[in-house]
Picture 1 (cartoon, rainbow, N blue to C red):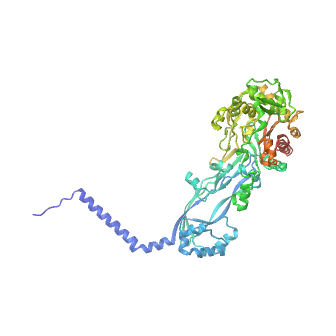
Picture 2 (tube, rainbow, N blue to C red):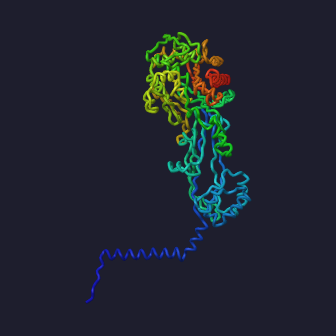
Picture 3 (cartoon, helix red, strand yellow):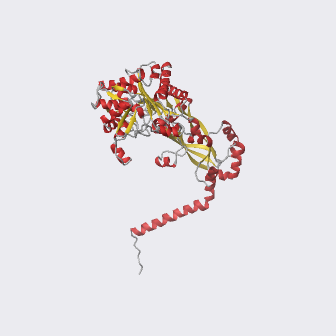
Length: 600
């Protein structure tokens, strides 16, 4: 009896699977064994390489269109380790590089090439014209190498007047690459200053090019290419003319360290932001010797620190206009109230002295500002209370980053809660006395000195500070302007504000004024000096009047008096006297700016 097999669906699928598997195995055998050598030779003759083309960064201009930073094209030598080692030994390659191109491989580069640690290795950046010429003449000796055009950042001579503002660029770290996958290791990104803050505007979009190269590393054909998109140009609020004058005036003063800030009180645009001493921006970007780097990092005047935004110092008497307005607004005093202010003031066994031992007599708040009378403010502070003073100080924006993009630090505004939390101790009357004259635990950045005056002279507005005025959007082909932003509005009685402003006017033009040098400025102005104690006089004299133990010098001013357009803060680290050191620097800046028709 013959048994008949019945094929079901399972058998049919199994047979088809076996047939497909036999075909695939046969094809693989043909390609890898029979034709393997042929295809290996073919692949050795041509390679596809993908190049990331870095975009030029946007240019940086000042508010008037003066160029501060831009890109130029440079040439760099790229190596494909896989192709190179098929044509040369590493030793032969090193020899040819040194002999014909005067280039020496570093140990790290040699290791990367020898071990194929990366598909491409940058052999040399910024080739000279002679090196490019010799490379093409001797290209047969450099199979597996390729010249790539890359942008280089250039900072103009004007940029050296504001290196802390401009910042610098560099290549991304591993952290940068992990954080932003659109970056590549050979792409320049902002590392500090506005180069970093506005990197997303300046950077642009990389291009990509797929190239067919032969076994010698020579380009045969561009298979596909996407052009890079240039970054957007930005315009800063900085007026480089005013910045240059501020730099020159500070340098001429002979003082070693400090900061100058000038803003427009109506918009809070930053017109000048100087941290002194400065450093060579181009050299910092391109590289410096170990000795040069050591000099920068060990310099006691800290040239790398942006003191305007990152330094924290007691403000001293420039705090008194704010305290005056707080007392007036709280009804503790009126503009006509007079307080007897002697040469010293006592709380129990503790004695607090006036800077002028003769005292001030019966004076009102305007005259107290004119004379910078400490004993007046000791009594005023106790009447107002530390909580109220600290509350208003914060409302002015001190201790708060009104623009976190540009403000790296903010000051400390102490009160009872702060002291209990940080120092684990109670607040005493002596703390209030010290706070009332800008001493004790209160510290601010030099930029925050402008915050303490701004609402007094602009109608009570607390504004967001800006250092970016506008940028040119390449996609829309439009100039995008940064608008003024109001953070809050404080309501002050006009007669209280006038009493404070008049006191600051008397600082310049009054008989007992502490900044008479500002009277040499051709524009009617007002201001306040400050001398902030760092250590006790006994400590200072014991240590031979050492620089780092001396008092800090401050001066804040605004002009024109009747319609302020410029608010200036000058800080001189360990400058000893606001009236004798900081105010003359401010006067020098504003005089030069007026006569050079930079301000009016």
